[in-house]
Length: 249
Image (spheres, one colour):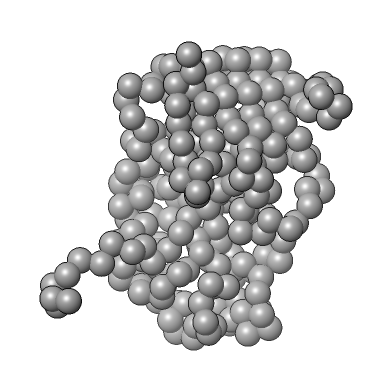
């Protein structure tokens, strides 16, 4: 292979969990390339990644990195505009690493990498109060129904169930569910289905202008979505770890 051949394999894979924090799983510990990848992500989606809180996950590596290497990685990532805030739980060596670099260790961060973690709580983290959702029963299961619009800074999370929103999800708002999400209004903010790792979850919405959509942590931002789908009724699903978006008839 020529020495100047371009390597397109990504060093790091970003997944979003149900708390709005990104989990950066380090797949190749190349600090320069990781920093460049994150810089490109910030440039493509500044509202999503700028000043984003990121958890560093070293579990994919064959060996625990050194304190000096992780310190250099943290500095490089901060220069891109994102902020590493913790290290994902792993081995005793990872626990010691977190202590030495001065970051907390999160033992139960739930992203699609942790598919065996059962949902335990249902929360709404908001800048303004979110009108209380109600429970609905569909096909023998209890779902959550949100009847009021979600405004910027508001978040509703349906733990262990589907979420139905009979209103608009505004820019800067988040609709999150461990199951599927049905939005009978405009989606201008973020919708994250299968938040605890359910790759069979789907997203349906009547008017699609999302800042971000994700299923089981695999996501797309607005700039990556075909323009012909904007403003349309769509369904979104995961096929072989690839996010698929299709207009509804």
